[in-house]
Image (tube, rainbow, N blue to C red):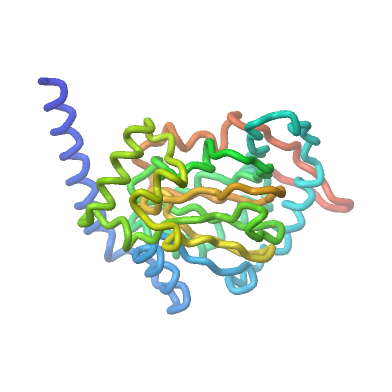
Length: 283
């Protein structure tokens, strides 16, 4: 009992300190153009904003896409047709400059700092290929991420994504507000699962399926989301999907131990490649 009380007091102090830091940093937030402010407002309102690489207009996008497709072509072939659960193939590409330079574009960092409300950390980027599956497990279950109180994950589709490819899907924040019964019903179901995630059928008991928001789109679609606040998952697919996942938190995040996967050896790291007459430099 005493340890429980001590832990609760410690959590309260940390939360109060976090709120105070937010207030103090508000005056230091970078200025935004109106079109970038729209992204921040949508993240706060809905938990998600969908745009395109073309609309973002970043100068390093061509290099990013070239590097991404080169690395995709070098991914080892996977023989998983006999498996009932086909795990995604993930490369950590944070140390390759084409990815890290794009992820640190000032425009992106300014948008993300305005949303998170604190100095931010670019944690890293995964290149990910997801395979067909018939049953929900892992990130196919509805879940929330836990790295920080607020965070941003940017998903970039490298191929056209239709329903058969398993697009990103989420529940708008307005349906799961902390002031609603839905929030606590979903929280209880997540707790029962050990915070692993819940199935479509379990979610239907709380939120009708027609209120879920699917995000199909052509190659180059960019999805900004706060995976901590927005209940989300990847939908079941019958064909492969390839995408990049860029991850940002406050600096430091609430749970730094969960962020190491974006730059350590949890997942495979491709060898840096060198185009003819060019030099590749790692960070």
